[in-house]
Amino acid sequence: MTAPCSPGWRYVCEGRNGRKADNVNITMEWRYRGEGNCSLVVADPLSKRVYRLLKQNYTRKFQEGVVDSESKAQAVHEDLAQVVSYVRWVMQPLLSPDYVTVPKLTKVEQDFIREVVRQVSKQRPVRRMKKPGDRVDEEVQWALILPDFCFVHLPHGRLSGAHSTISIEIKPKKSFITTYPKRGTTGEQPGVCKFCMHQHLKRQSGQWPETSNYCPLDLFSGNKQRMKHALQSLIKTPQNNLKIWKDGEDVYSAEKRLDLADILQRWFNDPTLKKSRAISCFLDLVIEILMMSVSPDDPQPHSDLTRSPTLQRCQSSSFTFTTGNVCQWLPEGSVLERVYAAQLLDDLEVMNVFPLYQRLQEQLAANPQLKREWGFDGHFPQDWLLDSEAFRNLDPSSIEWVVQKVKRFLVSKTLQDCSIMVAILPLDSLDLQKQNGPGENHYGNNRLQFDQQWYKVSVALVDLDPKPLDKIPVYHKQASAILASFHDTCMETATVPAAEPLHVPVRQLPVLSALPCLAMHPRVPEV
Image (tube, rainbow, N blue to C red; front, side, top):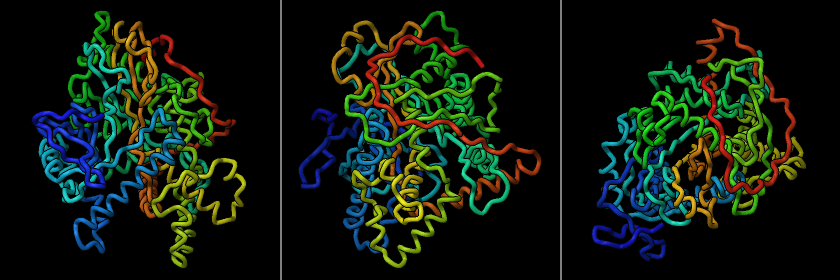
């Protein structure tokens, strides 16, 4: 969406051939959306777009052998173009265009970068500004642009404007415990998921003042009581795994905690809803959205994802298990199913992938050209990841099999670090009439009825950058540290049962059926 030209607007983006390609507002206040080690994400409240600006942590790797800033910018451009290619040819076909939007690579001016960084500087967490590498690199005049998924992007224009939009970001993390025997280890693998084990290391290192009770296996269980417990744990201790916005303004996160119950009670606009129940009702609504299936406008993606219920339970989960069914099938085509199935592409874990990486490195040392031939040079053609049938036909002793196993591990790592963005907008009767045309599922849009109220919702997956081959030693080192910390703090004082295998039937992901809207769903009882 391109904003109109008007006084106070400046052209700050240029196409590669020098033509003015976009215009960006720098006179009104930009909003801080978030950041990681490598980029700062800011939002334009008028155009409803977010810009990902690069930090020096990301760009300093391009300085080696570069003689001027123009050469550095060109190297960064090529790298970002590879990110776009990965999202377009790997992530979008794998996860569905309903959930994945390909970012736009755009050139921006230094004045724009300086002004936007200045405007959001007071909104950034102090912990994100302590090191020189956290500074935005103003020499790099390239940015990735996406729709602002804190809002529902409407194919039929504006609605009545009578309601606010509440949005939530969830970083779900790894959804299962790998039960494949770990190379070089003794004894059985503990029945504790990676996220819960990692909490011990974070506590030891002082990364977070509070330990999270969230467990990804609960969120992906398909059981609404377990899922609600997982979300309640995130509300209690958000860390960097949960953020909530109202009309694009951060209202609840690790850094900012407003009265969420009061905000949600007003947002529901239900005189019968008590403040003490507002958060619980909101989580019920979020669960329904995470479990809903959108009907694709585009053809079904040609992925080889498989479905299976998560029959595991993490021994560190604080959920009180009963003798009843605690796991259910994730609905076909739901965002949780897509993420879970893509994570399952890796069944080895880094301890077993690392020897495969070492085997590849030995051959690359003798013949560096193999890196491009194998597809580890940053280019991502449509056939970069083989489908299931082609993969099954590979000889497990061949180097081609090793290459595919390593690729699947890296794809799984991307999905373990992604975020789910959910935006929710209440609809009036007039709004419902406006939204009955084609294009309903643009950006994963759909409608849902919940407790007599209709909502327009959108679901999107973000943070889908490729993981480079050379990152595997870093993952291996981190996994070793997590295991060592967990054994130091837990295994010496208590007996932790071994991890349970999935041992469930796996079947091919079917084509999604059309589902323009969902029926009314009851609230989930307190647990």
